[in-house]
Amino acid sequence: MKTVTCTAPVNIAVIKYWGKRDTGLILPTNDSLSVTLSQDILHSKTTISAAKEYSHDRLWLNGKEEDITKNKRMHNCFRETRALRQQMEQDAAQRGETLEPLSSYNVHVCSENNFPTAAGLASSASGLAALVFTLAKLFDLPSNMSELSRIARQGSGSACRSLFGGFVAWEMGSKDDGSDSLAVQVAPETHWPELEALICVVSDEKKGTSSTEGMQHTVNTSPLLQHRIKEVVPARMAEMKKAIHNRDFQTFAELTMQDSNQFHAVCLDTYPPIFYLNDTSRAIMKIIHEYNATSPDGKLKAAYTYDAGPNAVIYAPKENMREIIQLIAHYFPGSSDNYFVDPYKLFTSTQ
Ligand code: DP6
Image (cartoon, rainbow, N blue to C red; front, side, top):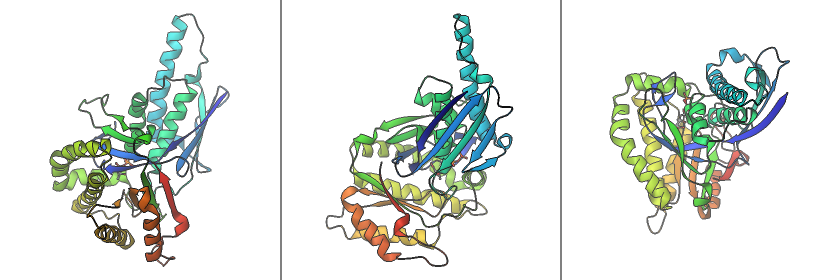
């Protein structure tokens, strides 16, 4: 029996992935780029044991046993990593060496998040990244992160970006087999230590429309998405990479907010429309724009972004964070029937 435990971080996209050109292999319709958040605050933790005595694969998610056979995406990750392990075992046998036949053992997987699942906080990204990384360690696979990102992508698209720290691009690739649809690090976490992220948990309820389901409705019905993937994202990706390299917060902030807004516009352009933002989300957007307007030199001080849920992620230079936390706490001192932003639910995190 062999047991391995690993954690993987959350990533929050600043250029959003929304739409697949291949739903089986999880191949996206555009490139995307994200910032990986510190694991100290938000992470998924996965423990996997493999033993020849286990009669079947079993899975516990946040303490509750789930039927692993119904989870096609996890199955994709098992299949891919087991195939690589099996190849290693066969290569070793040819050299006259023996490797433990782990690829033929069943596994027990136990995975948990230390934050709300499916509330638009990228739980699938960190969860599937943790699964693939732990399987890779269990099977002693060579740790080529881009190769592992190809596997994690087949668990959940955004998971491929959680295998790297810092600033990470998922290059959509053009091949039908997905072999060039991989994540690459644009810059390490040490590159821009002044940049921080603040997560405002507006709601920790499970979202109404899952990303997977929502994005395919968008692909099938939104004319605006076609404009976004052809005209907007390619130029934005280039500009965003340049802004990150130059630690240019002005451009980074502007592009981040514009891309979040266009992603939600594309959701609204979906027919029937998809709504992820609520009144609190929109109020936070307004607060950030007003806060930016108070800047004496016209320089942006903060940027918001929202994934497939109402929770705000605010990126800002460290020097502005205290002021931003005070501002949010001032406008949302407690809870009401529909929403809350409790200061204790605010996580600050250096990327
Ligand atoms: C809005 O990666 O959750 O967070 O590939 O179907 O699992 P699947 O979707 P998922 O979608 C994430 C969408 C997003 C934007 C992003 O993270 O880039």
